[in-house]
Image 1 (cartoon, rainbow, N blue to C red):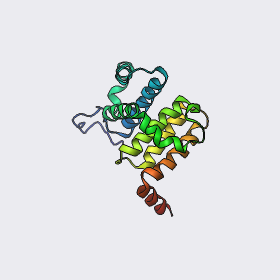
Image 2 (image 1 turned 90 degrees about the horizontal axis):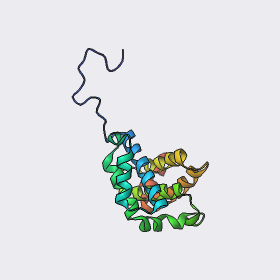
Image 3 (image 1 turned 60 degrees about the vertical axis):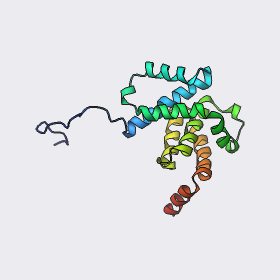
Image 4 (image 1 turned 135 degrees about the vertical axis):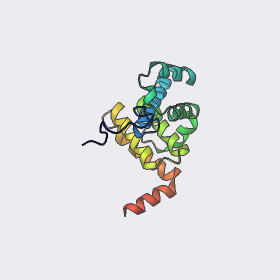
Length: 167
């Protein structure tokens, strides 16, 4: 018998998407990536990019909208500051990054700096998944290397504790 049998009533609001679920947060990151990518290529304003994404997105109701808006606005609004954090860790000039790698690094850096409630390993893993899904063949390895070094600089206590726990 499944967890949801036909004899028990569905909880109120059943079937409605949970905007804070893991998938809703992943969708928010994907949508923010699309927006930052679009901004990098088009030079459109943040408001224009956000309006376009919200009007064109089919699954906005299944997205953690608060996280999406926070990531999009934060990455675009603080792009120069965020680049200043990760650029010294790059193995090649910023201009040689693909727009996808650039956008993922902006988003990952923003989360490492400002979303302290999200464990650094989650931030890095989500960035890796975005790079695997949208980036070049080995882009995820590059993103992982940069964000791993950045996490050690931005969250030294958390990284040290995680490394000590692994033995």
